[in-house]
Image (cartoon, rainbow, N blue to C red; front, side, top):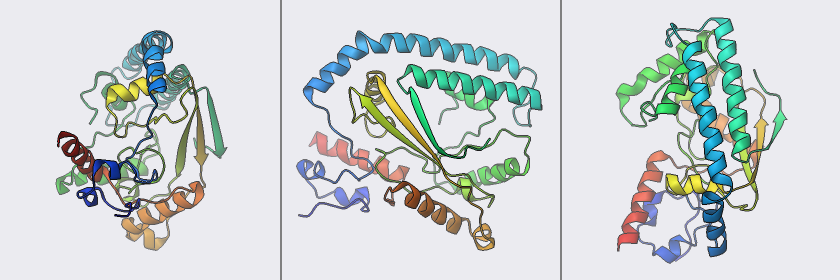
Amino acid sequence: MSNPTYNEKPNKFENLTRSEVEKIPRVTPYVLNKYSKFQFVMMIISFFVTLAPIRVLLVGTLMISLQIVLFFLTLGLDTNKPFPKKRKAMIQKSVRFVSRSVLFLVGISRIKVNGKENAETKNNLFVGSLVKNLQGMFVKRTKNKKDGWIFTEIERRCKNDDYIPLCIFPEGTTSNGKCIVSFKMGAFSAGYPLHPIILKYKPKFPFKNVNIAYALQSPVMNLLEILSTMFIEVEVDCLDCYYPSEEEKKNPKLLRDNVRKYMGEKSGYPLVDSSFFDKKEYIRYLKLKKNK
C-alpha cells in the first residue's frame, strides 16, 4: 500500500496499520517529529531542575501583573464599545511589553521581521480576561449557522478605526507548521483589505524539532517541550497588504482562497485541505488504533 499524500483527509487513514501511519510524509499537518530517549530525558531534567521552574515563576508574575494593570486601565469602560484613544494606547503598550517579555522568558530571544509591519478560552482566568480587555470576540468552533453573528461583528469593527485592530488566525487550529491548512471565513467575510502575516518558529537549542504550536501532543507535553528549549528563533513575514477586487468583495470564499494561495506562494508552504474537524477525527482514529 502506498503512503497517503498530505492532501488526503484523516478519514482515509482507516485501513492503515499503525506502522504505516508513522510513515506518512512529514508534510502531513498533524504528524509530529519524534524524540529520542536521550532528548526526552533531557526535557524532564530541564523541566523539573533548571529552566522550567524559573520560567514558570517569572511568566506567572508577569501575567498576574498584566491582569492587574488591565483591570485598572479598563475600569469603568464598556468593552463592547471603542476605548478612548489614550486608554487604548496604554493598553496596547502594556500588552506589547509583557508579551515580548514572556516570549523572551520562554526562549524566543530573537524575532526577525521581514517586510513592513502595520501599526474556547472565555472561562480561562488569564486568557479570557486578556481577550476581553483587548476587545476580542469569543467564538465557538462549530458548524452551527446561528453563529453567523460573528461576520456582522467583524464588519462592524472594520468600519470603526477606534477599535483595537483585529488579529485573526484564519486556520482556526494548529498543525506541525509544515503546511497551510484550510482557512475559515471570518477574516474574509467583510471584504476589507487584509495584512497577511506568516509566523515561522525555529527552535535552535537543544531540541530543534520542538513543535511550538499545540498540535497533537497533550497540553502538558507541549508545555514541557517549550519550557525545556533554551533558544527559539521566530521569523515574521509581513506580506504586502491584500486589497480585494470587486469580484472578491462579492465572493468571500474566492477572497479566502486567493489570500491562502498568496500566502502559500510567498511562504513556500504547501496548501493542505484540512480543518479543525479533520484534526479531531484524526485524533479519534489514533486513539482507536492505540486501544486495539
